[in-house]
Length: 141
Length: 141
DNA sequence: CTGTATCCTCTGAGATACTG
DNA sequence: CAGTATCTCAGAGGATACAG
Image (cartoon, each protein chain N blue to C red):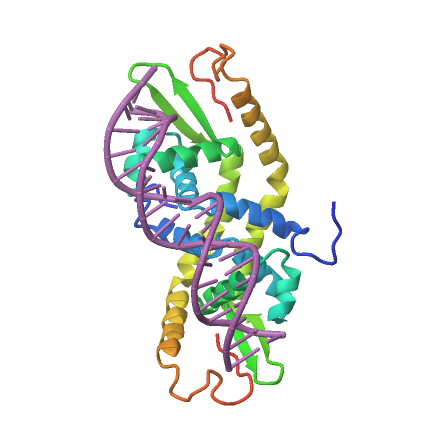
């Protein structure tokens, strides 16, 4: 965009951070992705998302509903039935999230490799070898 | 590789979640965005990111460095100087993150509105009016 | 079946002080 | 300047039991 000096708090970064705080939790993205193909029932989701607790599923769904990303339909039958579905807003979120997913899939290898190298450097520290090899400020990625 | 029946853990969702766990914290995205234009020094970043503590800046930078998103250059001068810079991998992450940023900017209004409506419905609960208006399963976004 | 209500644990994160 | 070391606390999240 412009070459103006950004203030990292007042610009769009603020909003990105807010969105990330919302969907960056442990389960939100998983739920949004799961609802991509259509509505799902509560226990159905609980079964499909391996490891989520009833409590967290409820809380996460409430949060998504409050933000207008998910809608909730109650069928007053016995036994009760509740369907959750993505709103148009929720669907629109899938696109940037999937872009991130593409990036993740494409780069998990590179990340794992970087981590391995980093950990290796950490392990062999103290052998008299500086991180940059003893020379001045060599970049280490 | 575990082949569950369309488990949302075994697909790419796993990776998305992992990436989100890394960059979904309070400061990582802010830092990545700040390093977009070039290298920055430690205290420079601390000043620019309003509210971050020294500790969290260090920890976040270490995490990003470990993942290969940021590189760290030490100049053994007095006083010491350390520059942080995005790696190519780090730069590539900016694109999906900015896509998310675009979405955030475009939809903060809608989200705030949804939240207001949701909270309003919560406040006026118990007036005998069911969420769906008394009929069967009207969707509420 | 779809939730609430407690309790409990563990981590994220700030404040502060100290070091090379 | 660029960190590390503690202390502390709030909140996220799991387990379990109960309710409509």
